[in-house]
Figure 1 (cartoon, rainbow, N blue to C red):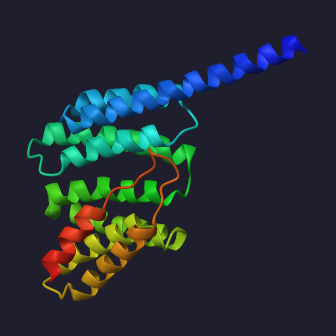
Figure 2: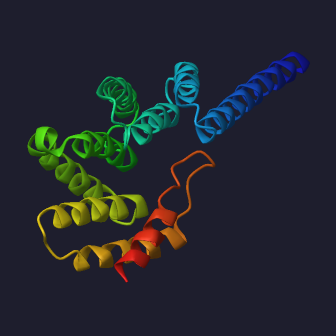
Figure 3: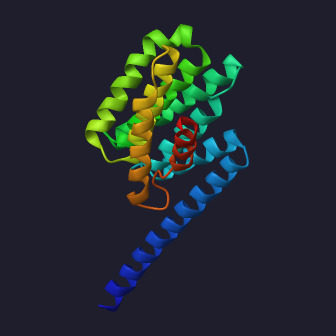
Length: 206
């Protein structure tokens, strides 16, 4: 009996130790990202994902850190490197967690980064894919504030491009803000971004 208890405690101890390592690793990766050390943050998310093969979050953030850094990037070689890395990460995330609305939004963001870089080259081939991804995500999670907000922001950008009224999409962003109020992420590391950006857009709408 004593041996069983000892083994149980050792197992629990190893689980806690692994969890602490995951937590500290993720916190460090976010710190690096916040300091603008994109490559280091990406590499750390990659190492964490290798140690956590059933956890989609490190790959999700590995994709996101490279995608966000690509918006506004004018060097095509650097942009391509970052977005190809982002795609590698998101493909891993999709394999771990299929039909995950957060991952669908992230895939749409990768396509959007390409369109933002060169709309004349990538707009025709990727705009339809972005719209389809947001529609799929909305069907899966109609009350997810990031899904509602990201789709509205994309629709708003498309409307501006074609000289159309953006008012209907302002209402969608307002709806997203309502959803943000009651949204509770599953863990400290689950996606919880977008509210500040949505608030900024609503102010501009008014």
